[in-house]
Image (tube, helix red, strand yellow):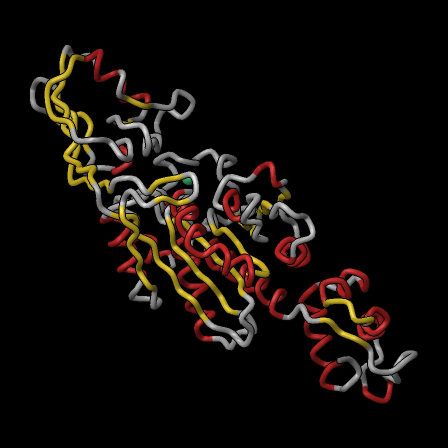
Length: 399
Ligand code: ZN
């Protein structure tokens, strides 16, 4: 996963454009994604697909023709969706188009302006003090014109038509945890699900954040409302920090119950802490049970939306742990069947070699409730409950 992140890291992605296409075409080496193009101008609920943005170069030169800001060194140096510009500007005018962070003075901030047409550059606050010249030559070699929004989709059919939604976003440029980690982990999760025989159908989408989720929902929400039993907005899964969970809006959703019972020692957030595409999936009128399981959460970690969220901030170990945790949550959901004891009174566990506190407690609560409820009432960890249900079912003691 880390190697894939390394490969994708330099690509200048945005909510539209060739960086997204290039990213999805690399992902297609791993999983059979269906790539969809939605033309600029397409309406999606209260939104409209914007013009497509592409950029080849951008820089600021001083009067001696030295590049003092250079897009080729980091694509974060340019405000995302900057319109093309070429020409001399005064030092004062340049300043009004520069973005820095005084509290993180060595980092380049990540800034976008998708819906207000402007141009701008981002740089470390410490580099700003070098820019005291009278005038500068500014070049943003970009195009901003009708094209399309690009997303990737993979449906993995299961035994049931009921679906689990896995959604991640592809619109961030060179930022590792937010959200190359989500892109690569979702890719490997999809690979694993393709290898398995699944009870549920998986709908896995790689979309630009917000506008992509809204566009996707506008085309599929009725079908998704009818089929989706659980889902995750996958982001910020590349570090080795504690797990964090932003729950879906309805507290009792299967996604929330499965995550709470599977992920221990996590940081708990509230739906009011939402920040990614669960905002769309859980919105009134859509109302899908989608939460977001992360490591350190966006907004919380110091490197968030800066050049410090780079490849040294994430690790293969962090990605592998996150992948394993997502698979555990999906195991919980896949195994959450209702179980009923076959015999009234306790069965005779001793003659089956099953006489122990765990099986006794399981049987004591197998009253037709689902496995999450039984595990909760019996005080059993979910993996133990799954294994116990399997044995008891094979012995014909629960159906
Ligand atoms: Zn972000």
